[in-house]
Image 1 (cartoon, rainbow, N blue to C red):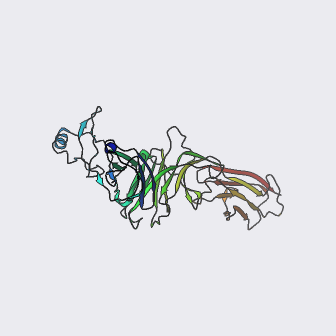
Image 2: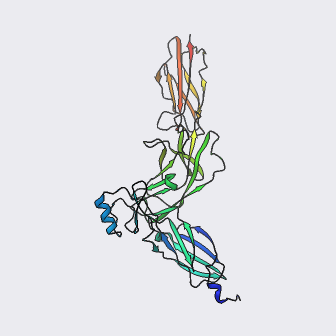
Image 3: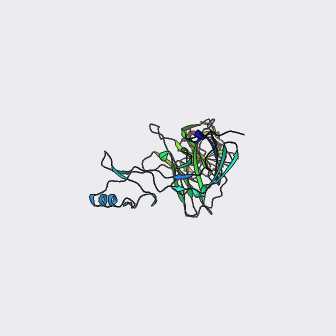
Length: 363
């Protein structure tokens, strides 16, 4: 039995916390250096934000009624704070306010140990920190996510390093979407080089009725050529998109599931082998078979184009590769005597191209 002296409560306790994020709950285990005067609670904190420049009339109105924000673009009507003039001529709210006491199940589980269970749906759409006060001490847990609803949602992680946008109708229920930086042990293929950080978007088991949009910023100073967005499917990275925004610094794509996403650079063209006819060879009966094999272990072959564009004497001929990458075309009638050209071009999803061209002869 631990004895308690009268001055044990005179100083704030030392706190140690461990937390885990579940699909629906934030679970916090709190260990204290002394007994607490009551069961801990939890508070949702919203971030202070900077205001745009205001004309004198709008500024006067905002200062006279600090409980009202004049700018309709503010992210939440729950902000309350003090306006201050910044050195750059802008005005900012310098106090966090409008914070909510969260719904929480708190329980004493052992000597000096408490457990808090917080439903993620109570965090709202603009909470960036969960604060747990305890007898003058407190801990702060960063919230790296947002509550998305069936009407949609947007979350931008780490100042836009990774953003997720869910359109209306994609979710059938409110879901707390989180983004965490993660480490990849190696690129999925030798042809790929990782660009920047990888991000794990959760909950990964969440069913989606529609595609969600994911965007990653290319790190400053990185060459943008060959950079594309990839996401995991059953643990395997797949190409999502090489589409960039108007600035060229963001790569965005669509996916039907929350997954781990990352940028990779693919500057290696597809592997292309033409096995028939032989370069500078002779075909005596005039019937030509153009065949070969094409593959790309980086971004993959572009299904929006003919993966192996085969031309005979400058004219396209049907020689679409099968699932193994083999392609073949046989001429229906003999070609005339003389020299003829074969050209085969393969393109991958990152835009890399390999082309093989040569001549052969019909006697």
